[in-house]
Image (cartoon, rainbow, N blue to C red; front, side, top):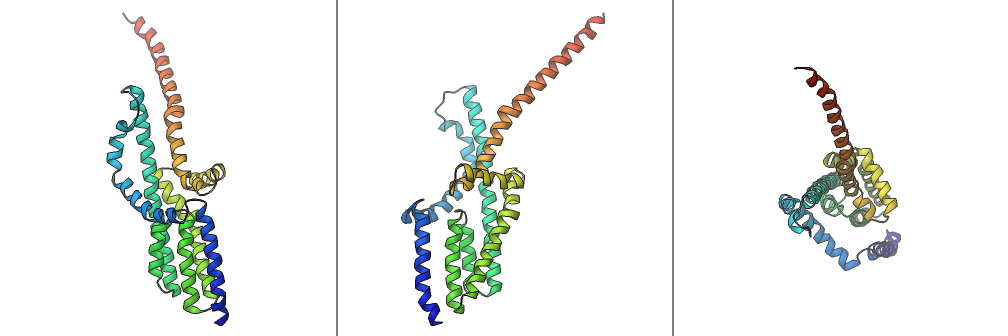
Length: 249
């Protein structure tokens, strides 16, 4: 126990240094703490005001009234539906994360396990950093509660196992079902956009960007080809039918 008490200040100092380094380059400590409050509020209003946002797209477009403006507004509305669906799916993933971690830590006997689970539900909307913020107090509680290194390691393993289950198993399925993308497409898009954009932003925007590409391709590439094929088929049918009509008096 004395060794643990001597080591804890060093561990806390290192954890704080890692946390400051990871957050500092992204938003800064003050901005990050503000984001913890603003992100849930922003998501609430985004999901709550979805119908009004979709109805008023045209008012925010700096374009004259024209068929082109109508087309842009329609495309943006479709993209907005995908993005909103993505955040709804992500909220459900966070809820599942919080329940699994809270239940696992409760079974393990950790004090304040339900509080840690609630923190996971709220903070894991922020990729990577949110789960770290939830993991640090859980490990510290385990260290003070049992006074050894074994229990904090088990708590860490619980976080790692559930995070891997999320990334491989239920998150791609939940988000994919909400957005209309295959689970494998979700997994590949996260890896691909993570490599293209990098950092935290890549995985965070992976599904919305992929859904946006799907909308644009469906409307202006695949949809255009289908229209061309339909027009070509109609012209061919008319050409075949015209001689038949001409032969009958």
